[in-house]
Amino acid sequence: MSIIAEFTVDSDDFALYHALTGAPEMIVEIERVVATLEDKVMPYFWVSGGDQADFEDAFRDDESVQNIAAIDEIEGARLYRAEWTENIESIVYAYVEIGATILQAIGRAEYWELRMRFDDRDKLSEFREYCKENDIRFELNSLKDQEQPMASAQYDLTTKQRETLVSALEAGYYDVPQAVTMSELAEELGVSQQALSKRFHAGHRNLITSTLTISHPDDE
Image (cartoon, rainbow, N blue to C red; front, side):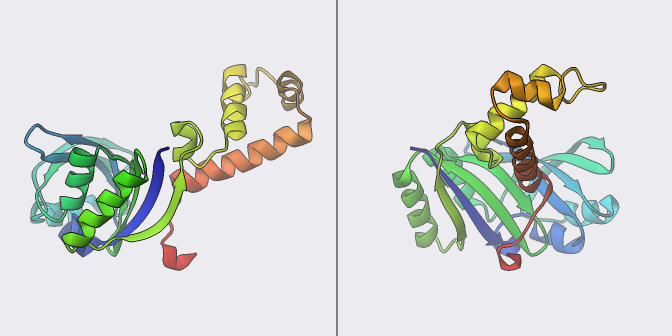
């Protein structure tokens, strides 16, 4: 069974430390990662939250990246592509050698938060042993089995919450004007309107928590 692991790592032990401390109000969110045939890792990441010029000045002098290119810009957030060069041995190893999947990586001046999926506990143990042998410091914050579809697991939705939200979308509940009322949707799903309302509330809360908020373990 697949394992979802969440780690915290200090920025100076990972990537973009110079850029993030040079523009400490900025937040970096990795959108996707591409591994090349030469075992190089190229991240695509969004930068937002402050002065893009300050970040880019520090970014250009950051020795953890090279071959930097700005790809897109939307509502003050800028998308970059780059190649990591330092301090990401753990991610290269996990991504290339173990086949782990990086589900989420969010960086601030003080720390990075990483959410990764491993095929099984043996792969996770192999990753942790590699980190230990190479003095790569990670703090494991949470560990759980993936007992639901990937989309649900990634956003902390239960199977019923995911099915409810998808059904509501397909039925036109979120359309303007609505194609179906909550009462009609509840009848279609075979549940009470009160039960449907609770699923909506819990599902929306989990989605917002997983996608729009960032919290450090020390804040919990």
